[in-house]
Amino acid sequence: MTIVVLAKQVPDPEALVEVRAGGTELQIEQKFATNLFDEYAIEEALRIKEKHGGKVTIITLGGPKATELLRTALAMGADDVLLLEDPAFLEGDGYATALTLSKAVATQGADLVLCGRQAIDDDRGEVGPMVAEFLGLPHVGAVMKLDIGDGAARAERAVEGGREVVEVTLPAVITAAKGLNEPRVPQVMGVMKAMRAQIPRTSPADLGLAPSDIGKAGSKLKIERYFTREKRAAVKFIEGTPDEQAAEAIRILADVERVV
Amino acid sequence: MEKLLVFVEAKGDEPRKATIELLSETRNLSDAGSFAVTAVGLGKISEHAIEKVLGYADRFVRITDGLLDDYTPEGYSEALAAYARQEDVRLVLGAATQAARDFLPRTAVLLGAGIASDVTAIGWADDPMTFVRPMYGGRVPSRCTFTGYPAVVSVRPNAFAVAPAGARRGEYVEWRAGVSPDRIKTRVLRVERESKGKIDLMEADSIVTGGRGMKAAENFALLEELAAALGGAVGASRSVVDAKWRDQDDQVGKSGKTVSPKLYIAAGLSGAIHHVMGMDTSGVILAINKDPNAIIFNYADYGIVGDVMEVVPAMTAELKKRTGR
Ligand SMILES: Cc1cc2nc3c(=O)[nH]c(=O)nc-3n(C[C@H](O)[C@H](O)[C@H](O)COP(=O)(O)OP(=O)(O)OC[C@H]3O[C@@H](n4cnc5c(N)ncnc54)[C@H](O)[C@@H]3O)c2cc1C
Ligand SMILES: Nc1ncnc2c1ncn2[C@@H]1O[C@H](COP(=O)(O)O)[C@@H](O)[C@H]1O
Image (cartoon, rainbow over all chains, first blue to last red; front, side, top):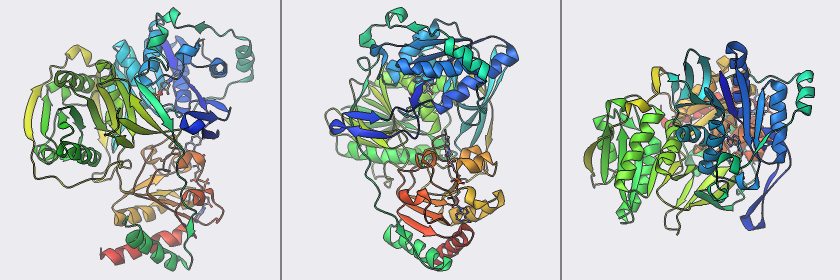
């Protein structure tokens, strides 16, 4: 079983993000983490390998710091990693990013591609299904339970107001949601080994891509401006006994805010 | 005239509320003569739902094909892209429901088009058209444009207001998709629906979310009662989901759902950043917490310092008294 995981390094959810230069830039505190949903994808890949045998390769598109993500994945038990590192790769929209990643996946001959439901920086949730379409593969999105069988997988996904169980033939792309598993913590031995590992890199030319087709230049959706969200006015406390507080709250919601 | 295609999603016999919100917005554009609006339904869709949608669109096209009876991302994306290509549309739009966010990215690839997901505002008259989409868990809204068309857009529920159906009635058309059977590689084995009539979190007008301060699973009955009186839904913090008091589907926040109701009531939850990221764009926020220094008060319009076990039932009683229910 050849399993490829697409994982992205993102700013830590608690990192400070500030809008600068009249809305043309973001200044992001330099604190990074593996995208939450991608951790579930990595863990699931390792569990599948442990059960069915095979090889797990982690691919990430990012800057030099993204090696941290790859080392963590190696420490967890991944066999191989690949870093798509080139200024031309960066700041792509969903389309350009998925196009690039699909070319990298295609070099691996994967039976299964796992990725996260959504990256928590850009909040797009596009790349998984788009990679699948570029590769002509099926996908199952927002999966909470996955069983791999012979040439097919059974996946449980959340749909509005319920759950859906689907069967998909392999190769396929699966996007991971919370609930799929609990990611493991790397062991010391693994961490030591990962520290010494060589991180292979790939350039646009290696993937047969022109710089104008990828990253910011190749994007079909351009960000014009960032905004700072208007802050809510300071909280108004409602005083009194619980009954008085409740009555006043309902009065405000009904008569002032008109939301009930 | 430029064409807009709006994907129609139904829930049982009814079009989804989020679809009607989007159609309310696009109908204004059609009335103003800026765009022609075609609503598109795939697979099974009730007469009643079609009838409703015809009050909002110039055309309703039902794309028929046995392969569209069950939702599959492969089938839906191919059918919608084929129709969009034939009609040479400017935008393919859909409410950002789970299904639409699942298959619209594939539609974009098939059209060689850009996509903007989960947008909260559209500058229709801007040249080029602009789309606002929240990033970083709603902390940073960004304004985007497409470099070319067609383009694909999903719109967050509650971004636009529902307007009543108009007097004009669109025409009804059927179109055969010819989905390639080889393309469909997923098969729906079963769908487990929760209790009927439960309001979906992402579409609810009001949400009452409980945190660990609710103390036990059974105490969520208090929130159910308040939500029922409000006609809303019950959400949960991650701690509550991890404690198995509530289902994963109910989780609001970074690793759960992003919601944007008109009213959000946070009961007995602390207001961790991961939670706030999933509810910060709500209309009015009321927090109830026994700790006057709880972080959630920094994100709320109104605060009640008190015990949820006392305040919540009192609110339910007061609401029932007012509405006479
Ligand atoms: C990567 C990551 C992702 C995460 N994703 C999410 C997410 O999607 N959603 C989410 O919610 N969290 C998420 N979390 C967890 C989050 O950081 C918090 O741990 C969690 O939200 C806390 O839940 P809580 O507010 O219910 O509990 P607590 O923080 O324990 O707060 C309980 C609150 O209840 C109050 N209280 C207690 N008793 C009463 C009473 N009788 N009456 C009134 N108030 C009372 C207390 O004062 C306290 O403020 C995530 C964390 C991480 C690390
Ligand atoms: N730069 C990247 N490198 C590797 N994987 C990525 C990258 N961007 C997105 N992905 C994968 O695609 C998923 C969805 O991303 P997005 O569409 O950006 O929300 C993520 O959870 C990752 O698994």
